[in-house]
Image (cartoon, rainbow, N blue to C red; front, side):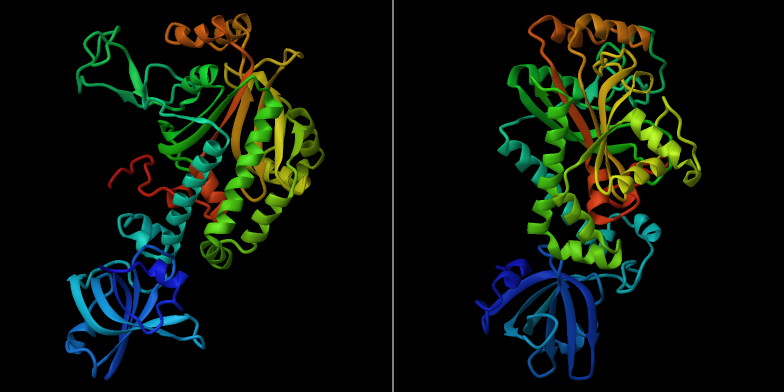
Length: 456
C-alpha cells in the first residue's frame, strides 16, 4: 500500500534506506540520456518529492522518460537522505508504472499561468502550487472554526438551505420552484412548498431560535445571494459562519469575534506555515507579519460617527467622500485600519442603513451593530445585538416594510422567554482571502458561482 508523502516529510529519517511505494501525479518530468527526475505530488502535503530514475535500475526507462505532466503513477523506490540539497530526501526508483496517462493538451504545464486562465480550468487548477495551498488553507480554516466553537461548548446547527423568509430584507434571493416555466398563482398553491420559497441568504434567524434554547450555537454552511455584482469580493454562492449567543450584548459579541479570528490565525501558524510562507513570497509580501500583528493586537473600537469624523478630517485622500449616516467604502475601511494601526470594530451604526433585527440604541438613531475591519482587506465580518423587545421589533419591521406574516415564528421568540442576544456573520471566503493575500473571491472558491458563470 502506498505511503503518503506527508508521512515521509514528517519522518524521513525514520524511513532512511527503506523501500516505499508512492502514488500521485507528475508535476514535472526531466529526463536525460541515463537518468531522469520526476516531481511527484500526492495532495497530502504542499511539497512535492523528487523521484530519481536511472537507466541501470529501471527496465522501462525509455517509457518512463516520456511520461507526461499530469499523469498519475505508482512508484516503488528507496528513501535516500539528501541533507546537502534543498529537499531533505529523495526517492531512488526501481519501479514506475503508469496509472493514468495525461494527453499532450493538458493545460496545467510547469510554467506560470494567469489566475484568469486557471479560473477557466477550475477542475484542474488545484494541481498548481497556488491553488493547492489556497484550498488546503480553506480546509484547515474550516476545521479550526469548528474546533473553536466546539471547544467553547457551542451547539452546531444545520440551518435550512431552503427558506420562506428573507433574513436580510434585501430581496436578493434565488427562488426555488417546481413549476418550471409556468407562472405561479399569487398564493403559490401549486408550488412544491405551497408558498414562495428561496435559497437562504443567512442562517441567522434560525440560529436565534436555537440560541434561545441552547444558549450558544453556530451555523456554518452555504448561503446564496442573487446579487448581480461582478466585483472581486462578491459571489452568488459562498459559505457563512454565524454564531449566536444568548444573554449577551454587543460587547460579548465583539469579544467572541476577536477571539475566533485570533484562534484561526494561531491554528494556521501551527498547521500551514509552509503555505503561509509561499503566500508571503509570491502573493502578498509581509503577509505573515500582518497576521502575527493581528494576533498580538487588541482590537480597537470606534463609533460610526467618530469614524466618519476621522475620515472627513482626511477626506482629501478618498475618491468617495465620507458622510455621516452613510456606509463606509472599502477605501474608508482600509484607512481606518491604518489609522488605528490594526483591526478595529466600528459600532453604533445609523439605523437607516442596517437590518430590521438590530437592537435600537437609546439615542433612537443608531443600532447596536458592529463591523470588524482588518488591515489590508477592510470589512471581515458584521454583527449586532438583536432586538429582543417585541414592540421595538414590530415597529422597526413596519418602518422597513418587512412582512411579518412569514416571520410570525421570529416574533414568537420575543413572546416566550426572550432575552438579550447577539451574533455575527463572517463569510468564510473573506477570511481565506485575508489569510492568503488572494484578492479575488473567485480564487478561494473551489467552483465559483458568479453572474453568467456556472460551468462546473
